[in-house]
Length: 239
Image 1: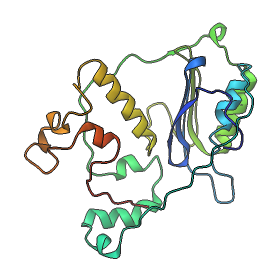
Image 2: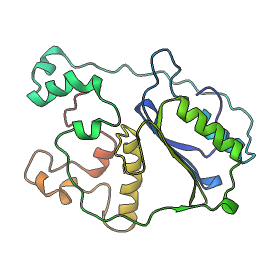
Image 3: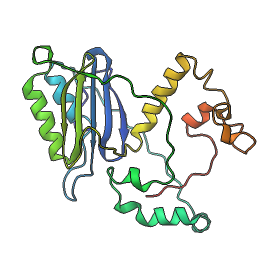
Image 4: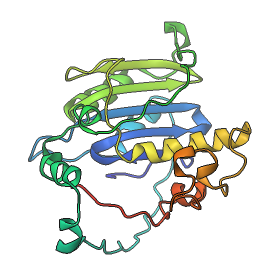
């Protein structure tokens, strides 16, 4: 980030290339941005700019805080032997992943499973007299999002959408890959499922809820292990 965040209680769920959800409970503010990677030579997505633009439109300010620097851990790379052991699906993905975008990935991934359920009510749209974010702040945020080859920008406050905009052929019904943003969203969903009793505990075996895993080597894996990406299941990176 190029500057300190202007809200101490800002949480964000970050995916590759700036697929991101910001949540600021003290302001009842949610910002969602999806998009493409900027062209070569253009700066990468800056995590602080967009929420700070919106927060300034609410007259929110905070003194800068010193940044804590944490040393990055070395990421082990798969050996040639590991790669050769991959299946045909692995190699086809390995070769073609670089050409994928957030828009093409949902169709590129195979197989995909349909999760049964129903859609909830749509989020209400704020009327002009209900909007609390200055038009200038919204305009600045939208201009930055468009400059950074975004697909969508949604800003909601007090439970209602104050701004919704799409670019580069996207729209409200478009399907787009969110990359690692989905991990944090999934964590929230599991918490809600635990709260309403659909899941008894995150320490339950996932096989209690996934019949296909019963009687397999995955039978003892817990929901907590899956959420922490500590299941021990072999994982290949495709980039």
